[in-house]
Length: 344
Image (cartoon, rainbow, N blue to C red):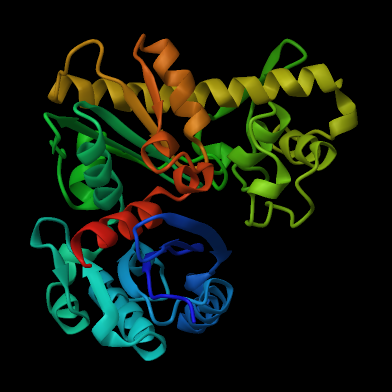
């Protein structure tokens, strides 16, 4: 029988991410499953059971964080935290479950429900804390499917500019833009085509995944979300979705023209994240050689930003036993590794 290990669970509103370390703290597997939590708690139950079957991890020590409490299936974040913890406790043995609470450490499920504000949307803190334990100074940047987190750290200590999502949005350290799910209408109000600028349709006709697929930074295998029109993540379909934003069809312009339109939106997203980085840097001005540590499925954007900002780049995978999947799903991997260090 397999020896019990350590599992890190990152329960989001659209995905469930899980990483597993063996009993010696070696990172073995990192997976992501669809989990449309906004449809109801049954979605989480199904995804939890599927993950347990895939990883054979029921007997492990479980370290848990979440952002799924934000979905509109719950009337309040407090209700969301409680519902998620109850769901997890029904499927995993509660005595093996440890809820991540940042500076408060690890809480038992019932403690976490009482102290819900200490555990709500703290997945970014787990990733940043692990990064700071491995690197001396820099800016941890996790660009996922939906959001971007920017966290400065120095002398192995974090300097977060707020702990709640509201505080972090005010400080620029949480930006609601990501590599897959961001509607293009949130990035710009107009775009050029054939030398003229057009106002964009105020509809969710295309998302950031469409532009990054066309620019060769993402591929369909990396995406579990549905596209805006439900059609596949092929270049042809991406061009058609992009064309709808400009009240056009894909065959109204050449492939080269649509590549340029994709670059326009990419530039807008890069600019938004770059401005947020500079805002954070003015609040916490580290040395010019302080690196950007990139995590998340959109960390290729962080690598681009490092060039723009003239700073070194470090991939989160290099801190996690060189596993790319760990960098894709940094909170889950960080939790599994932290649990192996602190809960053994």
